[in-house]
Length: 139
Image (cartoon, rainbow, N blue to C red; front, top):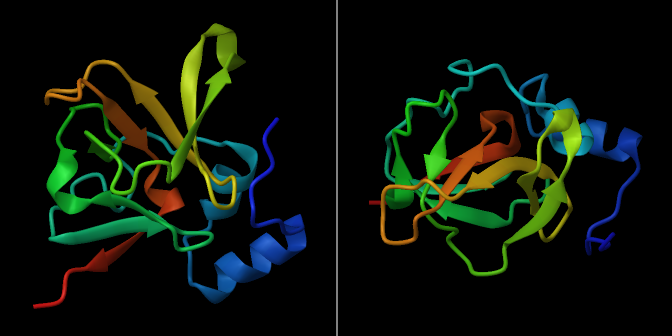
């Protein structure tokens, strides 16, 4: 397992997320790889211009212009904003083999990537809203 640059205890992550006003599910999603129920996340139907960052460490992950409606119930993006910002890990949980996405900076669980995206990348980064922090683009 690869170690992420930012290391904190569970208590430190909980305190940091509470200080940021993160939603209650953020700790379980980001630190214990929980998954939000579909169509419940605050960014699933969010279409404002800006950038999406890791809720735990603030690393830039996605540009709003790469977000699309995949019809799956979670925010979906076609490519990462900064190459290498997201690390892929083989996930063999729940009797499946998937590619888990974690923040390369702090190891936060973000979601999974699938090879069924609609654009030239062919990728669908299926993210949990609880793992994201949206920052609107300045005028």
